[in-house]
Image 1: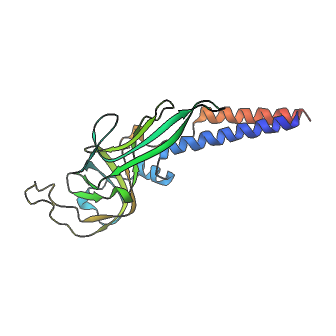
Image 2: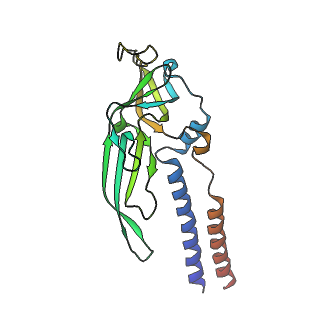
Image 3: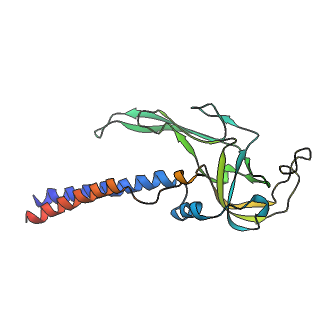
Length: 222
């Protein structure tokens, strides 16, 4: 009985690890744990006051070219559609990815003091997602035009310039800052939807207890 008990402990332990991996993958998306903590703790810097270094910006997405989303038919500056097929397997129904479509358009993030340009092909976008359930054959990831977002990024000064001379003063000047590297753009702007870094205690405890019981049974069987 020793062998099966050890195998059971290993399987239970692996299940616990996978539960943690899936939890953090869903919570963090493209950001790191450090960025998740900064997202919750850093003060917001108005765009016009940015001078350089790592900052957090809050603003609205403004895009002139958009794509219509699949699920809610809203205009999006960044959209990805993943097409799946549901297949039966020995472990039950599973989704198999068939193809992906990604449509990205440059946009601004604008607050009351200015705006900053974002190239989505160089950004890490934390999308809003729909169609993630097992039965869905289309999973959509979108960044909606007009939505509020946070940007967490290194910035540098580049000098302001007029965007459109006929627009109101608070909106017609680009901020004069550039985003450096691969900025994070996220829809998570409220505390209740910040990434949760604490592990899912119920699932972890259940897996740990299963592993412990299997290991104990193996020891007692010696």
